[in-house]
Length: 77
Image 1 (cartoon, helix red, strand yellow):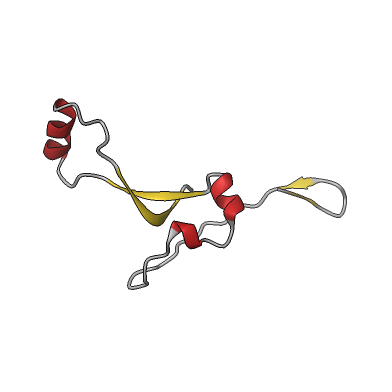
Image 2 (image 1 turned 90 degrees about the horizontal axis):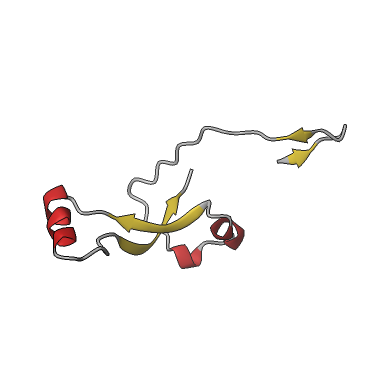
């Protein structure tokens, strides 16, 4: 959000697609804009179980920590 020349509040949204296929992984700790992490625009990426059955088996065994954080970036848009 910003204030225009007339003093009005303005906010603009842009639809964005970032094609990062084939690019090396970008580490969360190397991100140049820490304010985006503070504002939770970005966060550490997470990996889920490929199999719902395997995840359910882990939960049934009492393992509630079934989401694995990675050092990469996830966009929270």
